[in-house]
Amino acid sequence: MPTIEPPVPTLKLRVPTMKPRARIAALGAAFVLAAATPVAAYAALDDPPAATPSGAVDRGKPYVETRLFFGTERPDGGPPVTEKRFLAFVDRQITPRFPSGLTIHDGRGQWRDQNGTIERERSYEVILLYPTSEAPTQDPRIERIRTAYERKYAQESVARADAPARVDF
Image 1 (cartoon, rainbow, N blue to C red):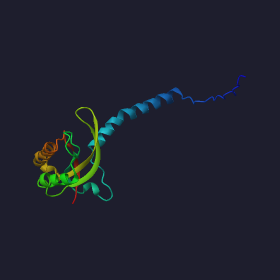
Image 2: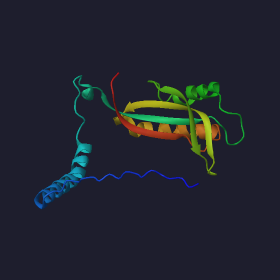
Image 3: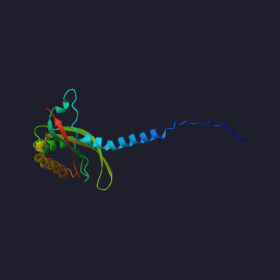
Image 4: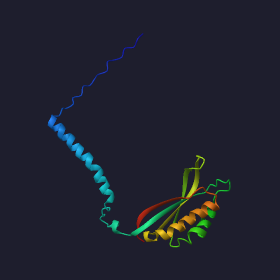
């Protein structure tokens, strides 16, 4: 026995029409807004950040924040870098170059190795802060840290991220 479907009601939408002059004015306004948006966006990138009521923007001095990411798995088949080994590396290689201080975070990371395989591993993030004026001096020190870890623990790389910061101690 065939089934009978109830009729589906249709809705007729009433779209208000614009007079030709209003339509042209609306299109003109949309064009002006669209054309001005990129200029305003680029100008905003150059503007200094607005001061907050607490004055936090004016606080601090210009620094560089360098973050280094150290993996712990060894692609050469050796044992993973333990916390004890990593902290010994910090004591020997990083602290002498940055005796004013640093921060270490435990982490989990993933990355694509030279063969295209996604590798997941326990990792450490080291954060270094130093005045912008010292960047040319600190850069070779940081590169020596990266190279020392790569060689000691057979790592393909130690990732580095640098960003400007305002720092107040």
